[in-house]
Image (cartoon, rainbow, N blue to C red; front, side):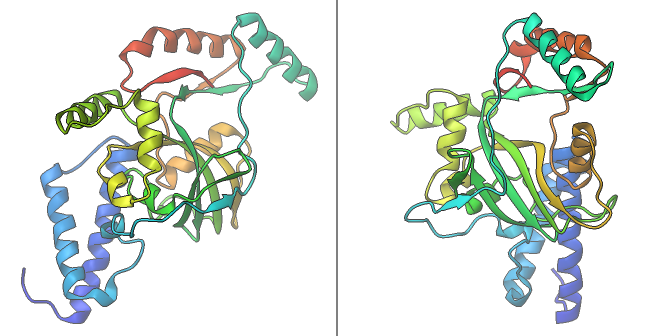
Length: 295
């Protein structure tokens, strides 16, 4: 690497961070990578080397700073921005149609659109961004209070440490809900490794995801193949941000660089939503993650 002046290094570091974030967005959110893993690793390595040479330019939101926090003695308890509620389940189509009738009656409308997506079987978390920067992450806990796992969530590569502002303005504050999961093939691979080391295999992908996220040492979490999908804006503040529907919320999350399930669908009426449920039942065994229904 050619020797750079302090000013040149600063500009190069800023460019590398922006470029790495752009590739993260292409890979995790759009699923359209432009470069190979090897080329991506080269960008990361160059950034690491420059930050080593010029440590005064290291920032907490740099892509190199995902891992490195010391182990915690215990997790602190934090209060959620708003309660993380659980869902009521319905098992029969008539229950769903009755729900639709109640909604239409309450709203005084003849038709209601629904947003449907697979209900992931993972660990529900709340992430908070201030001025576009990731500042806190916590588990659902009892729905009102959860465990502070900020440093552990930071190690998940699909979590942007800085939101995108290329398409819409950054929120002053954003609280977003997501589901941390472990893909089935990654779970099977992890269990093979555990057995080879003489350790107890994990029961299922959900337990594996929950246990991995709740390691006291973030460096251990970083070794686990965790992924995340975001699905709810719990609270947002910012000029010019107007979100009126769940569909708009999901499209906005994507524009900010937060990964949304590509199987999400806008259904024109309750019959389309029921049809979507049938489709997911048929596809369930072919998905690379576990689900327990549709939401």
